Image (cartoon, rainbow, N blue to C red; front, top):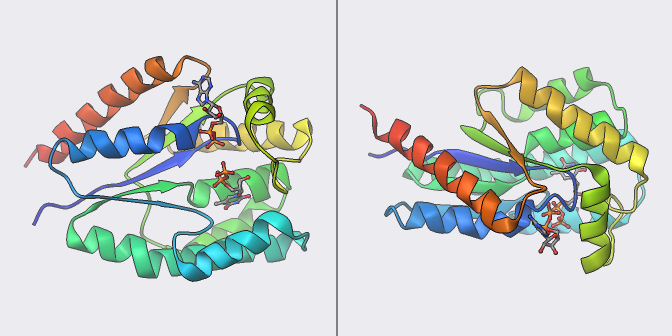
Length: 209
Ligand SMILES: Nc1ncnc2c1ncn2[C@@H]1O[C@H](COP(=O)(O)OP(=O)(O)O)[C@@H](O)[C@H]1O
Ligand SMILES: Cc1cn([C@H]2C[C@H](O)[C@@H](COP(=O)(O)OP(=O)(O)O)O2)c(=O)[nH]c1=O
């Protein structure tokens, strides 16, 4: 049976990742592939309930990190692992890199604690491809201000997002084999052109015996 790939979208709030998820899913579907799109925190009924709490309630930093991984445990069990087992492709709007970036980078929780949680929740599974939508903070902030009411994370100060972005970039350097950094300051059409090339390459690799 064909085996699907696991693709994650990452970046600071306002970088433009949600804008491109449907586009990438359609690219894959146009190749005859079955694609599941999902998001974190969320993706399951319990995960969406946890998302509501996580995005709107203040809590201890370690509680926040553990709830992110609790939601992820459920997401893996109910959505991601069954889909990959069927041979479907999975696209998730955020995954564990977001916890390293936001709780580790932004909120400064020691990374060793997050590594322990990651080892517990998904010791073997990692995304095949992580698209990191990268923009300077001011660009992300302008995009957010223009469009929506801000949640708990989006209301954070620029120091928080600088540290979040820095941790994303550090992980991209550490795990170069799965990360692709997208310059998301460009127009939507230009970003889509880059994404088309990346997906074409991934599908060619996938087709190799
Ligand atoms: N390349 C781009 N140029 C200009 N505006 C963009 C671009 N990408 C996204 N946007 C706009 O920025 C806002 C935030 O994008 P969104 O995809 O929701 O970001 P994220 O999911 O990364 O938080 C949206 O209003 C979207 O239309
Ligand atoms: C998955 C995850 C998300 N987050 C944060 C990042 C975002 O600010 C928020 C929700 O993510 P997201 O769905 O990207 O928000 P939106 O749809 O409003 O763009 O949760 C963490 O802090 N840690 C995590 O592990």
